[in-house]
Image (cartoon, one colour):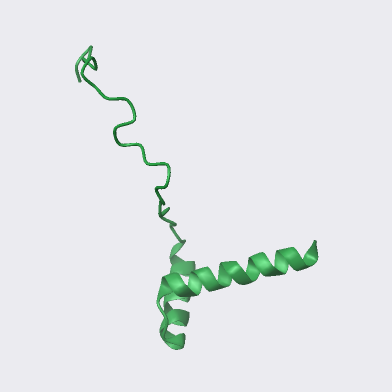
Length: 66
């Protein structure tokens, strides 16, 4: 790594996109992943769909408690 870098020709905000949607990776513990994989296979849905469904149901339960 250099001691100094020349940013004099740099353009501020060149790659900034305020409307960008970021997908955040979620890392499951091995036993949780195995359970979700088995359940998704049994229900014939993909893991992402199943996990989103589970989380949405928990959000709804939470809102019903408030």
